[in-house]
Length: 299
Image (cartoon, rainbow, N blue to C red; front, side):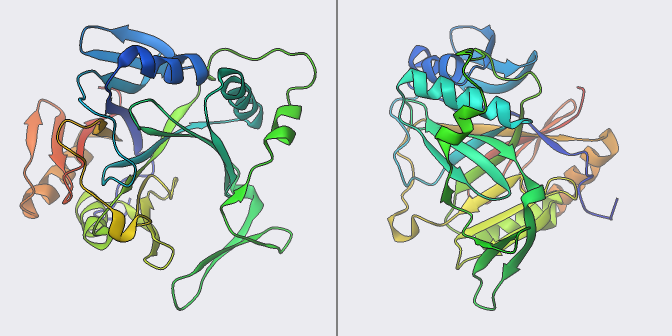
């Protein structure tokens, strides 16, 4: 592992979200998307796949997260087969919820929001379709497919064609595939260059797309290039969330070893970033106040 860089085994763990109404949120997260209800009490509801917690809903938000608020854009749950994506599309269609679908060339994605305004992406990675990524001198990003065609990265996904992958049996899997995982988290930002100094220089992620022209900055690891992303697409319309709004409570970064956690803690302290340690859990926040926890995998 390169000095100061996170190991390729680094992954994202549970994402904690604030919601105004847990039963209404479950209509999306559990019933339409197919996550399992793992645990719940009066204040917190854990959902996941294959027995692993992916999303934790916290009751008590006083208002939905407004659109174009600095905070969560979406949390992305990745599935590992196109057929699983088709089952998700079928569940969303049957639910009557409003959703959208895009073909990013490197992935195919379905988008929906819960009633609290928390954005959700269900993503199937298709990196084999990308030949190369071109960035022009003015920062414009173009994707070139393996057949040589240029791709915008935001073209509509053919949902009808996706659903045809299920055949005519009428069978729709009610649950999300057990190997689903949190693949990335995407936030709206005011100053993405400042945030990248933190995520790259302090935490140790690797840079991926860094384009003010495209309006997106992201980072990841050698294994997964796109793990934490920020966009500035709202531009001058971006607003701070109102007090008590729904949105991101915190997200989790799972590191490969206790030694790596200690190294990240030293870098945080050297950068004068406030840190709270509770056993083998480090809690901190990025320069725009997005909270995160760092843990060792398996703890």
